[in-house]
Length: 261
Length: 69
Image (cartoon, rainbow over all chains, first blue to last red; front, side, top):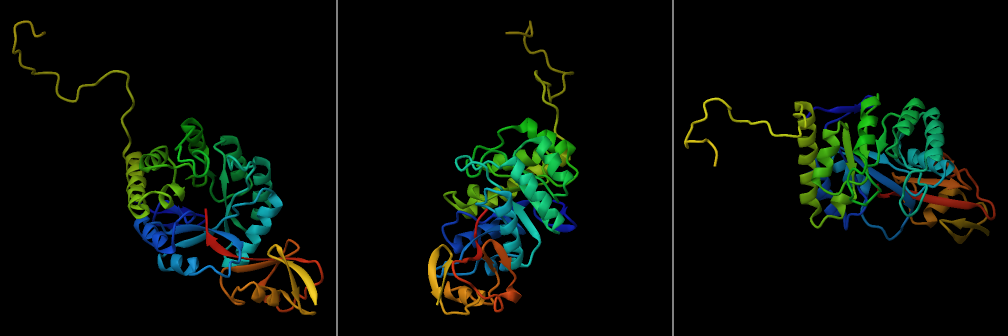
């Protein structure tokens, strides 16, 4: 699988792992290593003095580039502040920009998202926005200078896969920046479909972290992303309504008188 | 003493306490990687933690990287 680039930085793996939802740091380490991912997301939360172990050291050991998110923000203002806090905390100007508009579906708030993206880009951030599967919004995000667009397949943690393949296809077709399918992946075939649809990468968390066996699912996801990418590059056959024989039609033996039952 | 809201709860800190004191008070490593602080919604860069004196009723948030996303 060939590497892909975002804002001039090269990544070996086209699977980006979200670190939310793992039952323990050990389970997370096993899964991250099995996934082969070299970029992983983290969130920012109030310091918990009882928390043990450093997620940052663990991700460093796994060779992962750390991408902070703005999860939990409902306004452009909070998201921008959170991104600036992440820049302070992690010494990175990269951010996975999330601005949520509804606490039941966790769907992005389009206008707040666009406003935050524009402000962060002008403040020097490399912005990777978590967005809806709206092709027009994806283009607007690209126009304000986002380094990638990350449309959802379906709501975060829903495991419903790609709800609107048509929209995803339109986004992929017109994007001039990498497209990373973010959210909604439930199982390996969803990840493969995203890659077959032409996405540059897949970002997932719950599908692995909440699987019965996160390490095994991480490995399955790695293979699915590789397989989907390979199939896309290989060029699939067109869908047809009727069969097209794969064995030669000439030279078939006549074994009964009529040739039919 | 000066009373501030520190990560959502009221905290009394000595007069003249700085953001660095607040960071210590919540149990975060003062020079720790992955920690950031804001006062009344404004980011205070790490280099200014020891200089930024807190005044009464300010809201201090001390955050760190955790699993997420």
